[in-house]
Length: 288
Ligand code: DGL
Image 1 (cartoon, rainbow, N blue to C red):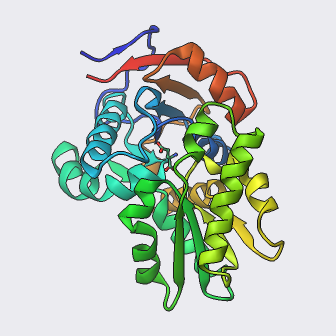
Image 2 (cartoon, rainbow, N blue to C red):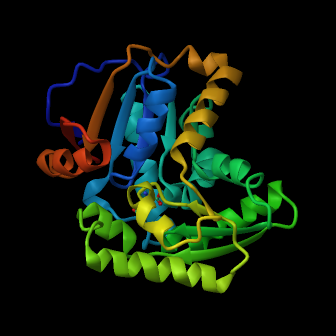
C-alpha cells in the first residue's frame, strides 16, 4: 500500500493532466530540476528521490530497472503525464526497457525521457580533438550507453570513461568539500586524462557531479571544457514541449514543486538544501 505521509491535495485523475515528474535515485536530480525550473518556471513539478535505496550506481541492471519503474509508476499514479529520469544510471539501465516494454502497457500516451541522449547531442559539437572523457557511476560506465549513443550521432569520436564509485556517496553524505573527497576526485580525474591525454571535453555523466564541478576543474587543464547536464536537459525538455503541444497542454502550469522522498523528510530537507541552497519541505512516500 503506497502512502504519502502528509495530506495530499493532489488529485489529478489518471490520463488527464498533472505535474512533470522528475526522478533521481537521490539528490542529484535536484541539479537538473533547478535548471528545468529556470527554463520552464510555469510548469508544476513533482521531484521523487529514492533516497532510501540510493546509490543506484553500483546496482545490477535488473535492480535499477525494477526500482526505476516503481518510481515512474508512482509519479504516473500522481497524475504525471511525463517523467524525466534525472539520473544517468536509471537512464542507462532502465529507460529503454520502460519506453519499449512498459509504457505501451501502462499508457502509450505518457512519456519517460532520459538525460543521456540530450547530453550526447550537445557534447558532440563541443569537441575539437574528437576525444571526449566521461566521468560517471560504475553502472553508467558499465552500461556503455554514452559511447554507444555518441557513435550513433557523431562520427569518429573517441570516448574514454572513468567510473567514480565514491563520488556519489561522498556527495550524498555532504563530505564532498573535504580533503578526503579531494583525494578521490583528483585520482579519478587524473586517471581519465592519463588514459587519454587528447581529451578536450569532459562530460559529467552523473547528476550529482555539478556539486563538485569546481574541484573537478581544478585538476584539469584550463583548455578542457567540463559539461554539466542541467542546462542541456532543460533546453532539450523545452524543445520537446514545443514540438509536442499535445503533451505541453496536459502538463499543469501553476509554477509549483513538491518533493517526495523514500527516506526521512528531515534527512531529505537537510541534504536537499545543500543542492538547492534553499529550505525544502519534503513528503515521505512508501513505494509498494
Ligand atoms: N544521480 C545518479 C546519476 O546521474 C547516480 C547516483 C547513484 O549512484 O544512485 O547517475
